[in-house]
Structures are given as C-alpha cells and as structure tokens.
Image (cartoon, rainbow, N blue to C red; front, side, top):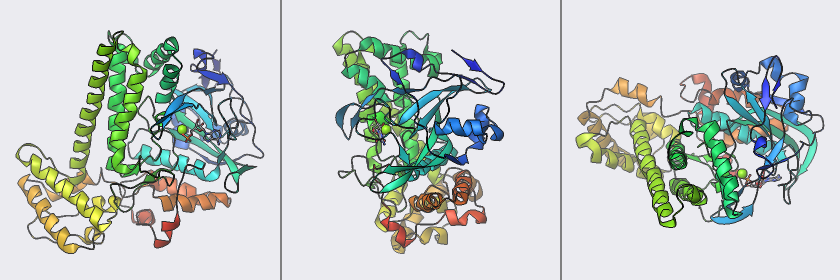
Length: 499
Ligand code: AMP
Ligand code: MG
C-alpha cells in the first residue's frame, strides 16, 4: 500500500516481508512533546521542508503521537552476539520503523522512532530513551556524516514531560532515525539460529533487491553481496580509526548490513591518543577498545558469513572455503583503506622506494602520541603546519601536545626527510591534509555541556555545536571553542550502556 499526498510518498516494504521478520506495533504517545531540533538539511533531502518539520502534524508524527500516513509501524526481530557471546533474541526493543519515505530523487528512507515505547522485543525494559542518549545519537550521526563517514542520521529530536527511570528519573526523548535500511547482521543471525533458511534467504533477497540492486541478476549474487558487506564494513571501520572514533558496543546486532555506523551508545572520539582506549565504562575487558575495532569488525563479518553460509554453497567444505575468501577480502580492504587514510593524514604518498620509510614514520608518530598523551585530533591537524625544510622547528600547534620535545624533534626530522624525499610542496600538502584531518570532532565534554543545556530546556548550544560539527575542517576562529582539548574537570565524564 502506498500513500501519496502533495508532499510525500510513504510505504513500508520491510513490513511487507511478513510476520517472521517484524511485528506490528504502535508508538506510545508522549506527554507534551517539544521539538528541540529538526534537521533541515536531512529534511530537504527527504523532501520535507522546514515548514513541514515544524508543523503540528509532523511534530506529532515524530513524537509517535500520530501515525505516519501510509506507514505500517513495525519492530524488527533480530538476534546477535553481544561481547562475543550469542545473546539469543533481541529485536527492536525501543525502535519502531514507521515506514519508508520516498525522497524527490527516488531514494527510499526508513523513518524509525527510537524511544517511542514498548515493543514485543522490549524484554525487561521500557522502550524509552532519555535526553542524554538521544542528544548523543543526534550529535554523533551529524558528526560522522560531515566527516564523510557512512552513518544513520537523526531527523528530529523531541523531548517530553514523561519521566523515565534510569539510575535516577530523567525526562524522555525520542529521535527519528533515518537510513536507507536499519537491517543488521543480527537479523540474519536470528534466522540462522532458528534454522529458518527460507526466511534468511528472503531477507538476503530483500536487502539485495533494495540496497545492492546491481547484484540482483549476478550469477553468484549472495557471495558477491557478502563480499561487499564485508568490504563496506572494513572501509567503515578504517574511517573510524582515522578520526579516532570508538563505537563502544560493536555487537553484531549493532552492525549495519549497509556498512553504516549504527546504534550510538557509549561511543567516543579520542582526546589524548591511546591505542587501547576504551570509551565504554561497561566494557571491562576492552573488547571494543580503539585498536580492537578492525579485528572485531572481521569477527562480526565472520558471524554474518557463517549465518549465511547456506547461501554460498550446499556443500560444507565449499561453504568454509568461500566464507574464508570473503573474510580475507575484509582484511585486504581494511589494510588498503587504512594505509591510504594514514598516508593522507600525514600528507605522504608512501609509494615506491619510500614505502617502508612511510610506515616507520607513521608508526613512530602514533607511538610518540601515545607516550605523550597527545591529543589525536589536534596533533594530526597540526602536522599540516610542519615545514619540510631541514631543521625547521616544530610548529607550536604541534609541540604544545608533546612534553618530550626531544623525542618529537627526532621524529620530526625523519618526517621532514621523508617529505623532502617525496618532493612534497608545503603549501599543496597543507591544503590536502586540512581536508582530511578534522579540527573539530565531537568530543565527549562538548556533548556533555550540550546535554546539560538541553536537559535545562535550552537548545541554543545544541544548535551551535551541530553547526560547528557541520564544518569539521574549518579554520574559522569563531569555532576555536570547539577545537580545544578537554578541560581537566572533563575527566569525570563517563559513558556506559545506560541510555
Ligand atoms: P543496544 O545496547 O542499545 O544496542 O540494545 C541492545 C538491545 O536492548 C536491543 O534489542 C534494544 O532494542 C534493547 N534495548 C535497549 N534499551 C532498551 C529500552 N530502554 N527498552 C527496550 N529495549 C531496549
Ligand atoms: Mg543496538
């Protein structure tokens, strides 16, 4: 069923997969919902004007207080591996897919409310979200999007008068999450665990038809599709590494089948560089530490490929062999992407004779940052100011982050020598580096300040931070406040899974 109005066209092709894939559910209305922020840029892509987003009708839709005309709200069933262990049935416990909106360019977008009340998959929880987690998800989607990293985004942030019980009572909030699809690795793992191969195949066909249409008629389409999912996941994680982003909860139910960053919980952008940085205070063993993410991505892809192995071949030995090749592809794509991203961050070509020297220089800088607790973002940003001239000193913007100036000096000489060997031009290199090394990232303490403001009923700071995050590479001095290391008192901020 498709519903058309002068403004928008809505259906729910995921719901049409049937009762084995999702359950119909109505959002639970909120008390006195207030639209705190509407994403005008994303709205425009969807064909929704500012006037639409701020209308009473859309506020009610985005709060879950009125139906989306033409939609068919459902919660999806999925399972997943959490912290390395099969967790059984999970599902959309507090997310409700209203339907898909067809944008003016023909692209179909899931509109999913997160925090809209209980679903058949809420298990022991309330189906709600609080302001802090909703603001954090809204901010993170925009931050990654503007860094060019694939992600779900939020169209709106709504708060309400309902009181939600967490460690204390907090006010409810709901975001409208937008992506081409919210299907996860865990959706496939669920059907595998239930020995439902027909449903698994139907879901694969759905995903290929809608989101990998170029593979629809490929003779070996399931293989090609899994290979692409692995490649996209590898590229995604390489991009996280390059900006010091830690997801925090890389469970397989939080892995997007489209290679998007999905389900923002206790994520973090690193301040001081620590390869073993753990952003989630509930992750006691550091399973999801920054330097673990690429390997975890590989492990997660192995769970997906295992779940889908019957699609690869009828013969178990063939399945294993083909699965291995797909996972090897993950490793190749990750290495090649990561190498290219690191080289770009250092402004190096690293080809031919300079290949090993580049590796040494790049590793040397990471080691030095680690030893000096140097700020990841600002240290990389400052590299653009290094002159390749022999014996030219470290720029202040760089040396400020390193207490061991002797070690920095030694490293700098090797970097400068390499730049000269590559015949690099300082100005050209600086320009290119400033397009890949952001100055402004979503630091936890910035998010925390905004959360406190929104909780107090003030959304101006949220708007200012969103604006700053939309120009991560800007040198505009008006944005200097967003490009600072955290103040000492920010050390008390901790994020966990509670949301
Ligand atoms: P997450 O750790 O946010 O990825 O969530 C893991 C699982 O717990 C998913 O099935 C969620 O839908 C569910 N979940 C998390 N928070 C809630 C909540 N407040 N109410 C219902 N289900 C939840
Ligand atoms: Mg999740």
